[in-house]
Image (cartoon, rainbow, N blue to C red; front, side, top):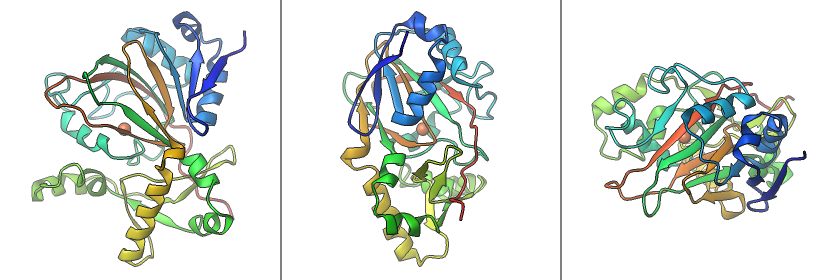
Length: 280
Ligand SMILES: [Fe+2]
């Protein structure tokens, strides 16, 4: 049976018309992977997976990412929550989740995709937004595309976390500075040949530009890539299943009352290609 879906917005997102059994049997896995890369975000409502079902479904799409030092347990499950009772070792790290980012910019090969499902939701707020960085690149004028393809940016944990922790002290900076500070091209040429912008709050500065020009360029590109045309805002309902392509989108959480619980369970797929510059 053919996979049926409808667009969520003109440039990002697809909603599947599918049930839990059809997701679990893997018969549509190749089509879902292709749709994910094409649309950036794929959702299905009313699925209601438990952890084991969510894990099994994720494995139909690729290889699970396991065993990060401060992340998923041995099953690959990561509980996304700011609540220390849910997530004692990891809660403060999620402060950065309210700013646009790509996951895993400190890994040699960033994760391919993540499968997310809510377990506890706040009464208001806490939506998750996604921005399509393929479409944002493709809509730029050709001369600007060519210029951006020549540039690289340095990504740091300080750049990621400082907006989230504006009263950070020296101890915080010492921890952040222990992370790798990789340099990536501003434009990623994927194995498929398609190109996307490599934008994230983690981008500290553009190599070789004056700091003022670097800041202006990164600010302008971030504003462009996260303008309404490229963004899908997901309003969570219990039972939802959401998959995003981490290599062709950015994401962020929207604020919610910190006294309310919000717990999302996620399984992540290993990355399959490094961030590569455009071949010249
Ligand atoms: Fe994230």
